[in-house]
Image (cartoon, rainbow, N blue to C red; front, side, top):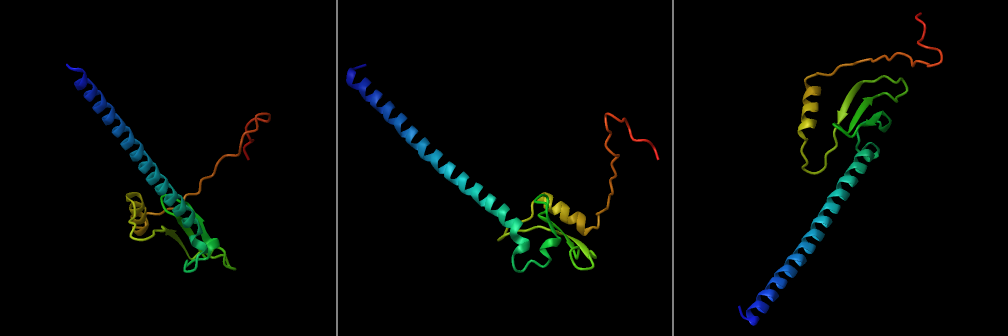
Amino acid sequence: MTLPLVLLLLVGGITILLAFFLWKARYTRIVRRETLQRSLAVTAGKVFEQLVPYLPGFPFNPKDARFLGSPVDFVVFDGLNDEAGDVKRVVFVEVKTGAADLSPRERRVRDAVREARVEWLELRLPPPVDPDLGPPSPR
């Protein structure tokens, strides 16, 4: 192999490496920017969801709404904070913007509510045990 051919191959290899590293740096910058924009949009959406009960057009008393976030955004105890405090109904509320669809989990919750597969469970826990006194005495 002659010296000019070796130099040509060496310069070509270096050029290809430089082009690759420039492409990689540009691509990484674009991916990071897109990821940051998506993250900001998700964060803004989560903040907006929590403010919905205080916006005009929310059909319930904001004091009746309890934010869950997942799998639905709110549970509304309609009438809980009225003077009489009579709860007329319990409403599950999912906030969506634009053309966003329900997720599969959200659809399953919606279907369970629509099919009246909703129950009440009152869970009573035993009183805590004081290590110095032992278990509570039976009454």
